[in-house]
Length: 214
Image (tube, rainbow, N blue to C red; front, top):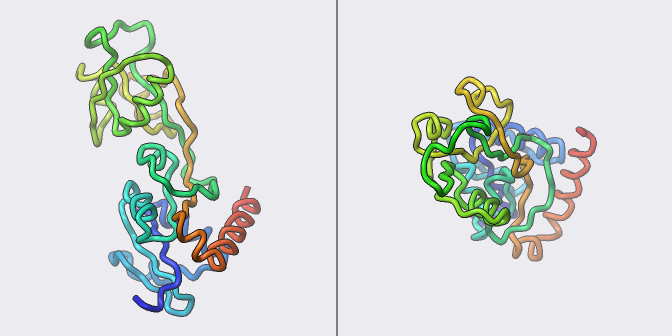
C-alpha cells in the first residue's frame, strides 16, 4: 500500500480495544478497525495509517522485522520474545503479574530432585531461576497451566496472575512474584529514526494521554 505512512500492530482481543481508546485520545482515527472486526488489515486513508491485527505473541515479531513500525504488547510477551525493539511507553493497561504458583510451601516436592516448572513462558522461567542459582526442568504448556501440579506433571507453574481466583479454586497459591506486567508501546528501531517526524509526536501524545488517565 503505497499511501501508508505508518503501520501499527495491535493484539487481537480486549487489549486491542483498550489500545484503540488510547490511540484515539492521542489523535489517531481507529474507526476502520472498529467497523469490521473480522478483517486483519485496515487502512486509515486520510492519515495514511495501516492497522494489522495479529496474535498477541506475534506483535513484537512484526515490529522487530519492520513490517509494523509501532505495536502494543504485554511486558510478558516482550520478555519472553527478547527481541531488539524499543519499549517506549508503559500504557498502564492490562496490568497483572508473572508469578510462581504451586501447592503451599509445606507440601513435599511432587516430582524429582530437579524442580519441574510448567509454563508457557520458558525463557522467563529459565532466566528467573538461573538468577536465583537453581536448575530447573521446563515443561512447555500452552493452556490450563494450573493442571500441571494437580496431575503431578510439575512442582510449580510460572504464569500470568490477575485476581488469583483460578489458582485458589484449584488449591494453588502464589509463592513468588517475578515481574509486574502491563501493555507497552514498542517501536521498530529503524522506524524511530526514519519516521521520527510522525512517530515522535505520536509517542508524546500517547504519553500525555496515559498521564491524564493515571
